Image (cartoon, rainbow, N blue to C red; front, side, top):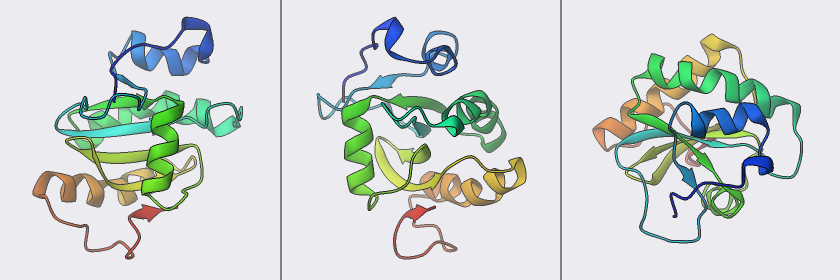
Length: 144
């Protein structure tokens, strides 16, 4: 996956802020093997769909990264978003995917209350750190 940057006008300013201000990598999915290391929260913003929850998740993502102790965040480009949806069984968008060294561990779709974000993402982040599957998840890695 490429760590290149999208055209400035291609993203809503709140999503672009994650890349420009927070320094999150933009993963375009075109160059396999170039993935950020560590445990990251990858944001799938529902490219081309104008989903209202996209902006809400863009605002809370940096706080989730900090609260969950992830190594950072990342923003999926359209190709990466398609690849992740396929890998996770067609999850609903927008979504947050927990990555371990670029590989998906699990996901959570749509905007949630703060406590639900923490309750559902914390086991995925812990599993990513430990290198194990989260115990409280179904066989599918998607928690939508």
